[in-house]
Length: 379
Image (cartoon, rainbow, N blue to C red; front, top):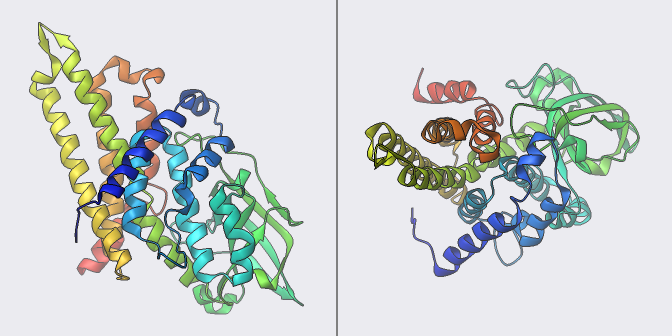
């Protein structure tokens, strides 16, 4: 693994960080308090090229290393963790599976709009009775001539209230369980497709979560991804990317929190001395730095494995667990260093902590990740 960066990569990192800091932070506190998603900021990110970063072209295959590095830059500049999470959720779980498994007709009709920001996509697999057991689906897809009839309910779907299209997972052959699950690209305007309003939550308030109801939703057979029964493979493919890289912006957020905490500790004085000179503060900052560096090593290794086409289930589970918990601990340390001001909404410190808790849940909880780690370690 080579961690060196070309001058062009370094410049793109800086320009992305600066773009995020200059454009994406103006009203983040208000949007957070009011649970508002900004489609204009989404489009600004697309215009900057964010949604194209992981996509393969005829001239250049997608590289996880480059995409994750730039998402780190975006997270360092952007204080809106909900926005950076949502961008990653669409890239890893909608765009890449569509490009990999969709027909050329579906790709040509849908992918350009997703990359340009004109269209927003959701990944609809979770149900009230599934969640961590992703394949315990009740949603069905029944072939009816040259269409499928989809019936069921999806819950806690990222971007569902604003999505224009969704990759929907449904059972086409219940008798063979997970091998009978299929995936469909569904237009949100299709009769029988209903998305709920945004469901307010503890953190990540600027990205809408909601439910999707499918009531005899009639979908052309041409919207089937790959073939019947390929749903588990499509899900595994998307998870290999999402679980690996969805936390890349959190590396940038941790760097931002360290920078803010160092500046505060050097400028805040007690008894004629900067509080950073006290070990209770300086050791917290040291721990924050240790977490960031170990998280970077894990993320960069996973990106390298993806680019090599190697399996990364164990490494992804380790990284998902470590980075998400490191982000929570780093946010808590930043709040402790800032004291009362960190508890005040206007500073944004408490918002980061609320956002960080979600990272231990979405994309597979840390408990499920530990089950994977333990099983692949031999117990």
